[in-house]
Image 1 (cartoon, rainbow, N blue to C red):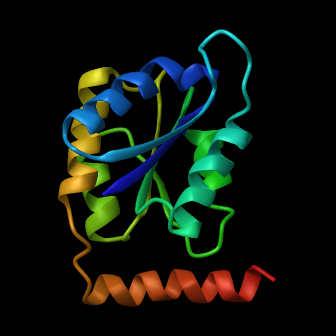
Image 2 (image 1 turned 30 degrees about the vertical axis):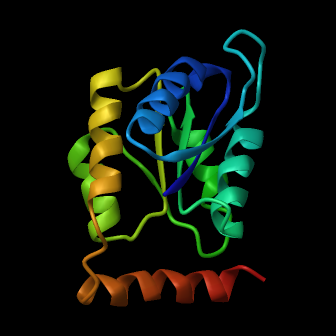
Length: 150
């Protein structure tokens, strides 16, 4: 599976560790965003990178990291047909896949530690979309997008 991962400067250190973790597990990783953790880099630009990789099909899923995860998740959710889930624990990451068919996982380096982040990554990639009544709800999200994204 190909995964896009990007961060602003505040998520740089965690991004590097997660990229390495994913590569060791056999994922192909498209890495983007801040070139280092010291120079300011906008979460907007990092979110665009992940969202465009996933929406174009270059990546099947994405991971978006900033200081809190809030800003970058807002950017990713501005793309039609993308669902980016801001998570702070494994259960949320699991449910984001199972119930919401999220394609992008977002979190904040200043909010979660490495252990929690890796647990969320594992849950996000191990879980499948449950379909059924959840598919009806995801279709409802699409209907809202179709009415509001012109």
